[in-house]
Image 1 (spheres, rainbow, N blue to C red):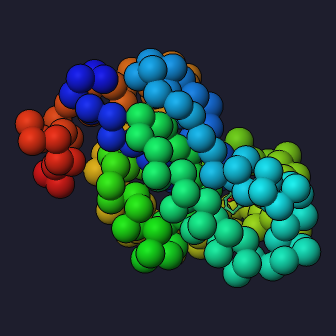
Image 2: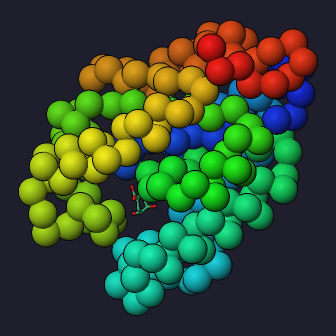
Length: 184
Ligand code: S3P
């Protein structure tokens, strides 16, 4: 698989709660790649957790920092990069994402609601009706996530290891022999 990818980065995109970090770490291990998580990098730079950054600097500034961090991290090769759920919102971010293989982890609102019911760390999900907020976010974002190269549907009982296998099975079909990512 490393031979097939020849060092190109792999980006994980998708809604909060889809397991981008967990699956990304497993994938990085499997590929002998580095692992980065853009939220963790942002927290390191700003020295505050993401929810505090939303309060102290506002979402628009968070998004600016997110774009900067994404640009910096894509200077590396041989990396799996778990992105924040909103990274797909800015067209400029796609310039960076398009340099690698983009994998969309797709889960239903029902499953995300179960997974995120007790979450206190995602600022967009606090003090709101969880299901309707997730539905509206997914509705706004689905067509953007769908621009990824590979869509992996997450079922209720899928373990991170099962998702890893699905990803590994599907990567070869998405890489052309000239190393470009196939859009088919
Ligand atoms: C966000 C997702 C979060 C984080 C921030 C905003 C979003 O990352 O970047 O709370 O807009 O969907 P995860 O997808 O890793 O939870």
